[in-house]
Length: 75
Length: 235
Image 1 (cartoon, each protein chain N blue to C red):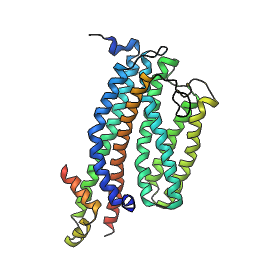
Image 2 (image 1 turned 45 degrees about the vertical axis):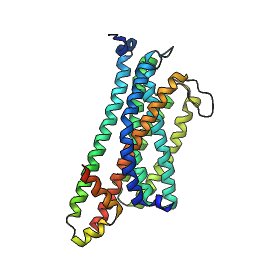
Image 3 (image 1 turned 180 degrees about the vertical axis):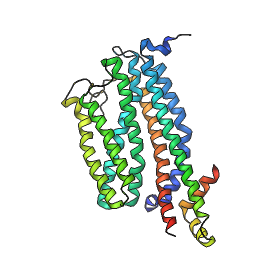
Image 4 (image 1 turned 45 degrees about the horizontal axis):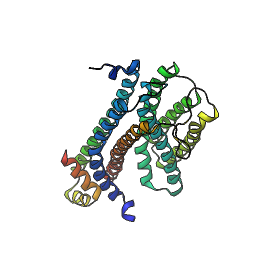
């Protein structure tokens, strides 16, 4: 196996570290954002359960609310 | 046309686009990484260290573009007071900050083998570091100033001041040429990067732009749900 592909004539450590750091930071931001989104959807649905049946039915007519309910039910 | 400006429709659309982007983002980035690390040629002076360019340059471009867009949106919001615009710039700022951090860190990793130093107080590097502070102050402003009108005013002020810094970043390599090289890729002028290097750069840029769109849409949904939650409490 040609190790120079990974060593890159001594520059490997800088190159691999750059790519690794970039993807780790991107992955962290993605996971954190997804977690916040899921939590907010869950909290929103929890709060709608405290509403009266009539209020909930009125709320469900809104497209955004319908979307949140659908999105949450998928997960 | 009005349908496309309706927040409900935008929210519905974000869901659809998100699902679409999720399919493409990882394969495109994988193709970009294969091209960047294994297929693209070495530079005749920098050798393999040039491969850092494929993450450094797109990150810097995205962080600069995000701030320029934020400034534009802040000014529009300040003049026309369109509520949904604040949701857009709030969703963009964390992505811009992330890519600004990546650009500085990968730049430092590129600087060590090519310049012999991790950091220098070069005009381009310093102005990029200042941009990070602008991003941080901007994010703190909308997070901690609860009065929406005041928050909007302060955000506009910060973003307009940051816009001056963007001009400095762009021309710093021409005005104070020290360590950082001048622009190699010019939309209006001559591009000095070889085509075989432009292909991986283009693929990586496209992959990063898709990732930016993915995070932006998720953040936009977060901000919209926050607004909806607030209105729920008023019921």
